[in-house]
Image (cartoon, rainbow, N blue to C red; front, side):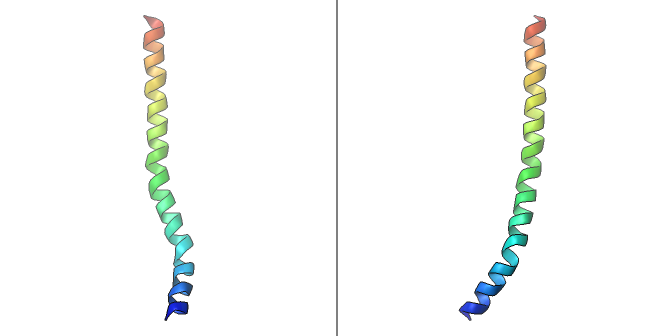
Length: 49
């Protein structure tokens, strides 16, 4: 039983990590991108004034 569970765990682990990484990284990338845009806009507004 333990060996079988270990085998399936190892088999599904990279797939699960891959999906989790995608689900986490995509919103993170959007967040970083929009934060950078907002920061740039803020700096240009402050610079213009």
